[in-house]
Image (cartoon, rainbow, N blue to C red; front, side):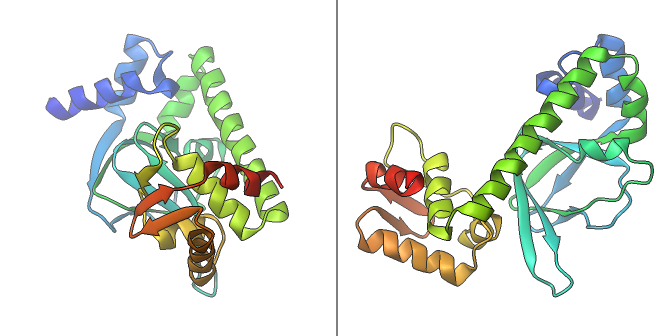
Length: 226
């Protein structure tokens, strides 16, 4: 009973499910389940049959692909209140294109793809919310392709730090390990370390462990706009 209530409350606060009526919300709840994950535990693996999409309740989930040579590329890092794998419900025989692994202790809700797709026929507003969410993510992927094609590793690193820095504070903590960030930015770990060292030597940024201190935000902005 408590789990059912928790699922319903979580769904109600998510933008994607905000236009569902009471009966539809209850239907989604009945076709959903909560999964608690330990750090390092995988929710699904690249190539697995896709029967559910997910809403993150707490924690942080890493989505990544592994090349035939065994190299890992982080595609996205999902945080609380974000959904992922929802586009797969529109494929005839979907398989997850990535592996999902918890970076911290995490809790997610799994929503049945087939039942939710059937329900979309009854909720035009939810269809538009889903399309909007998928379009937003597509634009983000296009921006990432542009960055990978046109920007240097230094520009991508500085942009990442600026995007994650609080606007009114010069110090903050990285939420994930440097190796994960390097993979997310498509930069080799040793290259990432050299970039950070160079920024430190130029007295622009200092990073000790996961603690980041920005000394010259204007210089960082200048690096990104050259």
